[in-house]
Length: 229
Image (cartoon, rainbow, N blue to C red; front, side, top):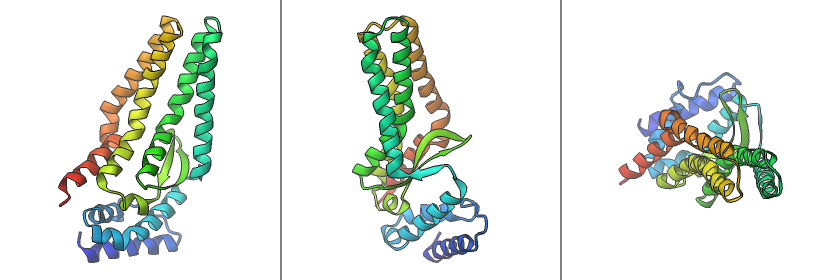
């Protein structure tokens, strides 16, 4: 896609949004334009802000269950604190409350570490986020919407690791809690549940994420990094 086509595609998207008409960014050619911009730093400087406006407007129309990113981080951080508190209390409890507490703490951490990892790693690389959201029923896990202008201005390799960070954090969480559970004498049935949760998430990544989620985006951005002059 050449410069003129990128410009006309983005302008058409903005006209559609300004008219309050429904927009499908994929069929409109928007994502093909974004892919073309990613390959050329001069186009990033020219179109990044316009792309971010279109992406944000389309997101806000299609995802009603959203809050500001800062509030979302606070909510997930509170969830992580609750999970850690439950794990801290667990050794003082008798079985089976100890085992149930370990599983509850692991569940709380598993629910929040994915999104928090994206935000923490992204922020260190210069990527900002505009919203926290839940997209039911397709994406029940809390997510964060990137600010596409800062995303485009960040090197492709850094973008790739931002995408991978959520998947890595989610996969490590059950096994980290499993080690803690062993150390405090959790019953074997609860250990087995944690191991099964970790194995299930790894299997899900291998079967699904590489084709449609974080690892697919990781591969896409790493390919751009390798192809960069």
